[in-house]
Image (cartoon, rainbow, N blue to C red; front, side, top):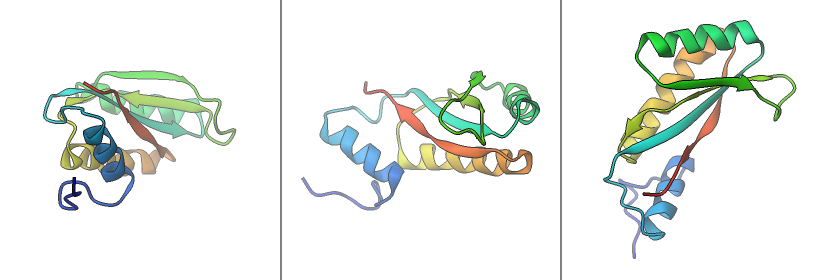
Length: 113
């Protein structure tokens, strides 16, 4: 099978989606995708969480143990199709919204359907 670089660019998102497709996942089927952003303090994380809630986003808020400099995590759970455009667009939106609060994008997780 040849990889279409227009659908699966050679970056973290494209690589993950390509592997999911190879593993037999139906990428056209919408599902909940987890996007995590970590913050240097609780106040910034809560402000970011409020922003997501004001935009009707499902989220979780918890301590983060993977980075002492960013001990708080907000995870957003949009329900979308697993396409490069959907994932990279949402990822970029989170990055641009979190930066003024000192947040750092920490990745996404997408369960197979």
